[in-house]
Image (tube, rainbow, N blue to C red; front, side):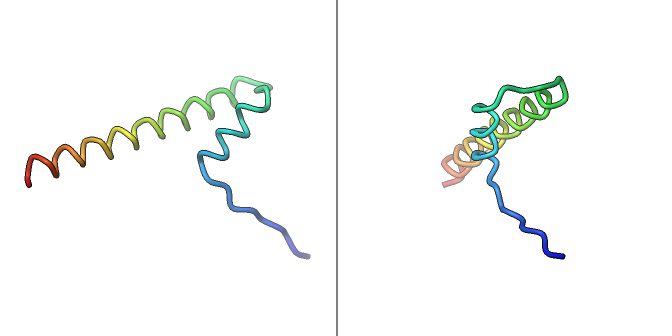
Length: 56
């Protein structure tokens, strides 16, 4: 028995979510949490660049 798995990036997962209507509240909550995670990652990258600039 062989399972076929596919790697999916977070951004492509979000793109797929935007194309499909969410069926229930749990799916909406997952989409909301993923968006929140991506926003925090971007904010962390920006903060790291600011700290590097201040230390340089």
